[in-house]
Length: 112
Length: 115
Image 1 (tube, one colour):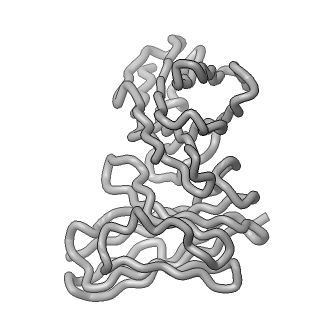
Image 2 (cartoon, rainbow over the protein chains, first blue to last red; image 1 turned 120 degrees about the vertical axis):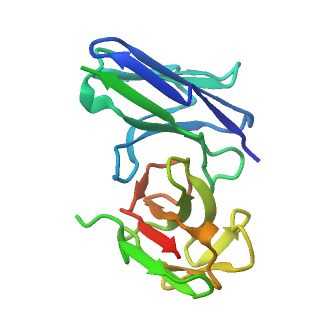
Image 3 (cartoon, each protein chain N blue to C red; image 1 turned 30 degrees about the horizontal axis):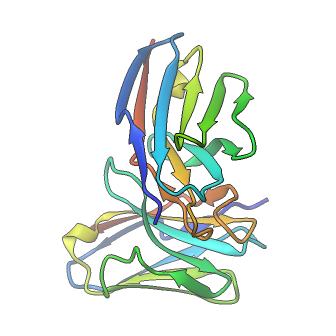
């Protein structure tokens, strides 16, 4: 099955700095890579995703890059704000389209 | 429209009791997923349904855990003879398409506490 590794597990940045979270996956059949944000006490929500036919996707201050050759994808947050503080999860479906394997999460803290 | 709902929101039970957790997916969503999230931990996959069938039950921790889905809609996760290590938040999610190649919409979760 798919194996997803996410790094770092915790990340602390100053407001206004950039944050980068990286995930690696094992199954080359994976072709959909979402990122979810989970605020404290809330449910995870999709913030951005990318499909394997593109290498980068941007949405305002967030972007995701994909390197299919190296089997890794990253979340980039620019001009971080305190409200970006949350746990971020990456995921990859693998060959089994019915199941997504999630990374262990990254706790991002943005200090004002 | 209405999102994914789960009930109860909180459940406190005594060790050894059975519990049932309910998930109402978004109408028309064919795939439904159950995850377990222990405090400060990630999303542990338990089981998913495609319609009323469960092609992948590989994540169920033991035979004390079971799940069913009826009418391609509501799903129930049952934990028999609960143990303290079952304490966690149980999250349900559904997708519009029939696969995980689509956004998963999560419910608010059920916080289970086993005393």
